[in-house]
Image (cartoon, rainbow, N blue to C red):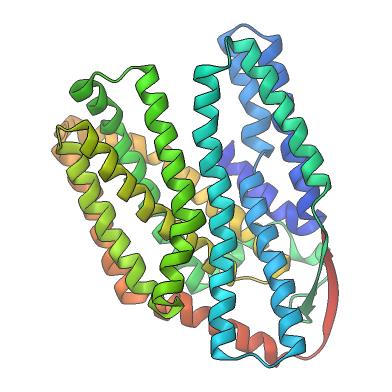
Length: 383
């Protein structure tokens, strides 16, 4: 359902506005929670997952909304002054910073949620009602989001009825940069899900992890991810400069491959926390860069659909990854899945070294130059 919903809602946000889809996502989450509050069966719990899985795609819609804000900001700056190399670098860093702050909020939520569930919440019903309350608060915040007016060139300012919901898929299939990033995200998602088929079992085997231990560990993961996207990614990109993004991603791929191998084999719980902190930091930096660069691959009228397709591809990897991990575990319980994860990160390292600059960075710049040569501009309001 998430696979279908992410592509559908992403494209729908291009048609009917980001805030409209954010409202729908919040309402879908509330509906699912209400179903859970009114049922006490396994079947009812499954039905409660349907609305949110299908229509609650607010994270990808928010990424598209952030891209809209930055497109409007860049257009305003370009209309006031001629663009320079330093100006382009600062805009790239600003996109990464905004994406990082969005990821930081998600990470903090993953940290605070388990802590509240383990300390304050005393039962399932109470947890459901608290979740409904926060979902309703989200509706209020969505209503407070500002609208933004974006100018689109005549090439992209087509009648909406002629674009079709397949536009995001066609854009992803025809854009080399989008295909490149899609392959990267697929490999990263496969590595993540294959690793987790053996990781949770190893925590129980090595350290006798119980529910409370898992709660603390996931809170640590959430905090690390929040800090990596909210602070570390921006500092790293600002320090090395946007021109060094390829080397930054390559270094993170090495850290992810070696880190996952070492964290599985260590017998020290303290070292597990240290290594996993480094792994999550590297993952946060990579995701920040990839999300920021994705926002430059499509015009505002198509960016929601493109993000939706990317989310759908990652959802597909989320389905395939555990299946592949289980199959590999039958061959060798530890070695086969773990070495597959390491090889996937090695493949990503070589992939980035050989093509990221050509297909993604230069592809984005060429797209911008082509758009600037087109005559005729029309306003479009994105809400």
